[in-house]
Length: 268
Image 1 (cartoon, rainbow, N blue to C red):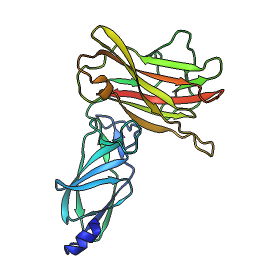
Image 2 (cartoon, rainbow, N blue to C red):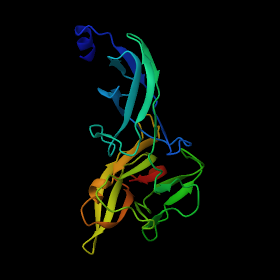
Image 3 (cartoon, rainbow, N blue to C red):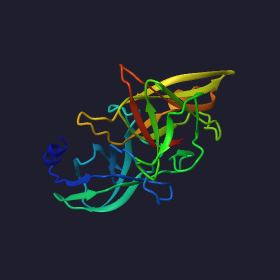
Image 4 (tube, rainbow, N blue to C red):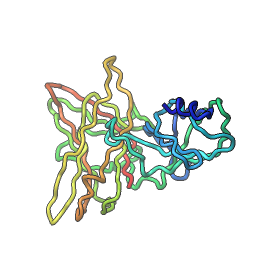
């Protein structure tokens, strides 16, 4: 439709193809695993639309052009819940556009600040508390997305339920602002992300969202990156002592389940 409109108006568009977006730490020194799926594009501050990666984007501009791109992700892993991710700075660059010509570009996004909580399993002292007697969560070096170690949850009939709760210190900020949990994971079963908070002297545990398994029909189990919205269930006025938990259980007659996690971070 855009192309037809351009031709009707007598303009010949230039084209952008945006691929392989990269996400870096606040100082730009470290590449961080991510899953940027959608891009809000602006040319000379005029909106060009929201585009998925690899699409050929027509732009009615010519010559030196200021391009701004906002990173979009899928909140809670839901395809239809696409949002501008509030913790990544807008990518901005100057490009030269020529009518009918195509430019390929890799946007690079930076976090405004580094994550207050990060668990990469590279050092002793995991930032979780476990239910009494629960020993199925261990750091392993046989499979890690980054670094040398990842966290393994391994379920069997004798250990058919697992729950890990984030520690209270350092505390997460109170208020109604956005907060997201990011996890790299690969699994053959779903698992639950929930939140815990105190309000009016009582403690509440709220099951929030199930994360789908990554195992495919061919048996492969690739890593995926998911963004879980904690700010919405945490954001009720008057809540404090905020935590989140990860829970998994054997389901539908299964006798085993495996979940590997890496780069668990909370940003707010």
